[in-house]
Length: 273
Image 1: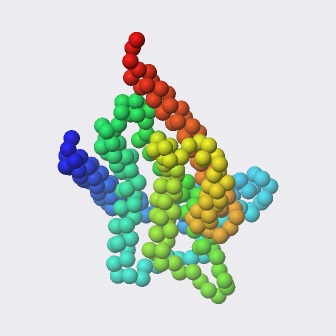
Image 2 (image 1 turned 120 degrees about the vertical axis):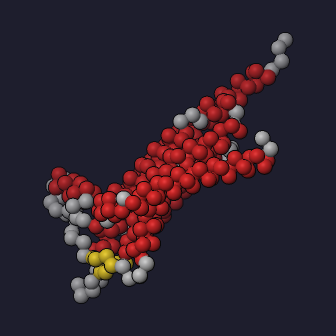
Image 3 (image 1 turned 135 degrees about the vertical axis):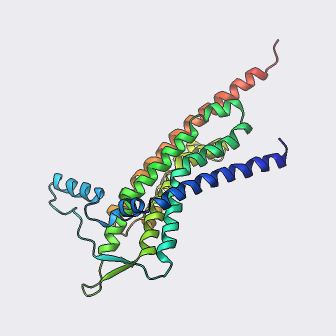
């Protein structure tokens, strides 16, 4: 294919991906009651599954009701004439993007795969499924862990009993959607390490050498994503550190495959006696 033909193929890849996101967005827009009442606004309730799980864990450990949630001491309000409509659009877009993400990855793979060597395509088989699992795991972790912890902390925090919390709707929605979406993207860390290994930028020894630096960076990211308490930061940083270690394993496996493939190519290219 010529350069212009590649651009045309890329354009249609983007168009098909955008159509998929738009279709999922429209479906989420129509299912407004389910998306908002059952999903987005659910972490406001003290009966949310995460709060009940923490409460049961505390009681099982003999801590009584120490980990049980308190009633949310804030109300949501809309202060803009078009606020609820644009909030509806934004939530529908984020939900549509999450639902269509596997298809978008598959479209990108269709565009990239023809340019890879057959051995490279073989070594990267299942990449779309792997990336999808990582993303959806991150989204679930953000929704069931980070978002409830943030809402519980900031929603119940008061400088004085005489000051009541009335939270703007767009502020609450921005917290839930941004935490959920960004956590899904952050969980793609092993995939990023895989591509950097294939590009020759990183290797397992380099990743092990800079492990301490990476863990410090993870703690900083966790402090940004979570409320300012140690427990929440540890809950977030723990899985990210495990993902980094998993990335080292993937890097080592990828490097072995690359060396084996280059060795087989060299043997095939060696002239026969």
